[in-house]
Image 1 (cartoon, one colour):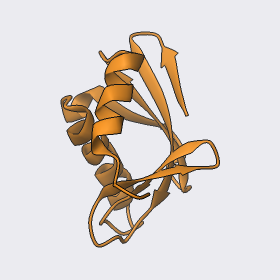
Image 2 (cartoon, rainbow, N blue to C red; image 1 turned 60 degrees about the vertical axis):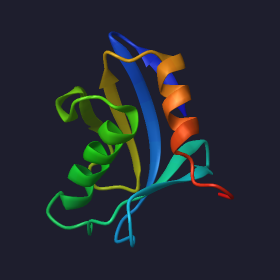
Image 3 (cartoon, rainbow, N blue to C red; image 1 turned 180 degrees about the vertical axis):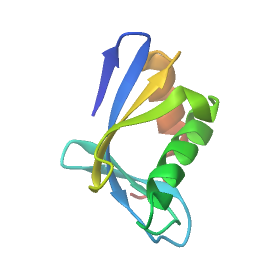
Image 4 (cartoon, rainbow, N blue to C red; image 1 turned 60 degrees about the horizontal axis):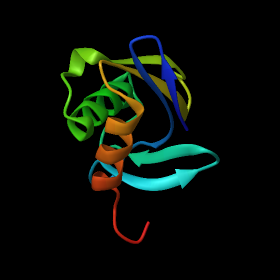
Length: 99
């Protein structure tokens, strides 16, 4: 789900578009399951994913890059300038209770 890479961390995601709100739902098939409000049309959901992850982790949007899965629910994002421990703490804080 989370792995270190040069200069940061990679995060594997399972994304549900068209949600009522953007939120972290838990874990699905070894990936962090998130829901975003945007529809999967013309890259809107991908933009919503990177923006939401940046907000959750407290990093600038430009530090979050979609590196795999542009047209799939399974996506991989790379976050520059963050450690595994910082990511773990931020994700634990953001988890939806009961998910």
